[in-house]
Amino acid sequence: MAKIRVMDDLLANKIAAGEVVERPASVVKELVENALDAGATEIEIELVQGGLELIRVADNGSGIDSEDVPVAFERHATSKIMEDKDLFKISTLGFRGEALPSIAAVSRVEMKTRTENETAGSFIRIEGGRIQEIGVTAANKGTDIFVRDLFFNTPARLKYLKSIQTELGHATDYIERMALARPDVAFRLTHNSRILVQTAGDGKLPHAVTAVYGRETVKQMVDVEWENYDYRITGLAGYPELNRANRNHCTFLVNGRYVKSFQLFNAVQAAYHTRLPIHRYPVCVLHLQLDPTLVDVNVHPTKLEVRFSEEKDVYAAVQSAVQSALERSTFIPKALPRT
Ligand code: ADP
Ligand code: MG
Image (cartoon, rainbow, N blue to C red; front, side, top):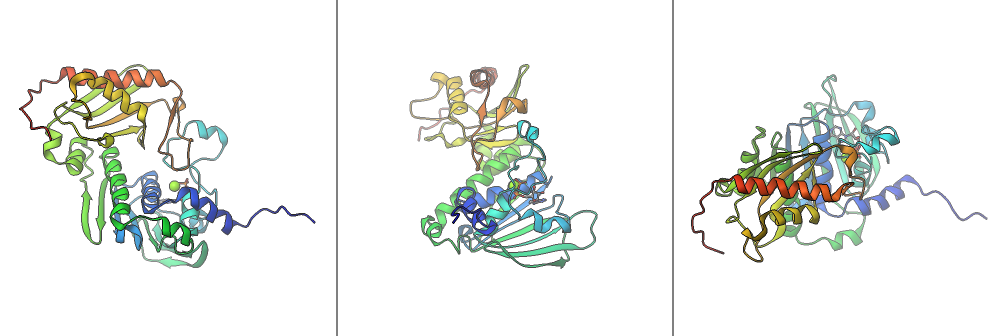
């Protein structure tokens, strides 16, 4: 008798969730990316108990057509790529069609959404991957999604979560990076009703940096503005005097996507060269724009890594960009105390 069978969707989604949804911050990331892909200019993120009790993301983006609402929660359902050639020029943050089904497989989800052309909004409620309710509702244009009781049906995952403070820290860090990535979008993050991050969305990077790092920090940063044939690098880099004790204070955006990259960080450090005291690290926000065919974002489901096809060129470009910004600067450092 045959023993190999294709697993049912519910099980497949739960397994996929193991990769996509590691902790509350991963849910925040996926939902915020969806909001950005939908063209939202205002995104509100509400967390209760570090996101363990509730993660809510409300946006004023395109919304989802009522007929698409249940489809959005199906595995590999996406409006973002249609054929394999699209994979080599991805311009959206999402493309796998895995986030919503994965999140819904391991939590209780409610979503309200409405597109511009609809008079009534749609409503859907899903628990542990099973649709409980679909209907119509009054709704603003955009999408408002509630994720409750994350991992309620995967006890092993639940146990693995850290304290509320730690989980909140991960989510906050992500929202701060996105606020720096998208100064044109107004973000608001609240935790247990307290505002933690709030940006104006006026498109000005210094304003976003002020919201995240404070006014004093932004005063000690210079503009980075550099381009050659393949790369354009813009942003802000701190004067050497504005140094930090760890490497977490540089944010890299590659074609609008927040990435973590040792390589980019090393290039920045190389630009500072001996300007920084030993064991001290720079502060920066750098946007790197390049032809999408020169960068592969399809490396890992959580997509914080990228692969450049011309690694050495990217390194050299980033180093030059920061170096020339530092050399141009006319900052005369006050004798700042070393902390
Ligand atoms: P992906 O983002 O990879 O396409 P998701 O599972 O995250 O996959 O979402 C599935 C689809 O649902 C998206 O392609 C999009 O069409 C729709 N969608 C999800 N969230 C939103 C949102 N906030 N606003 C508008 N459409 C959305
Ligand atoms: Mg998505």
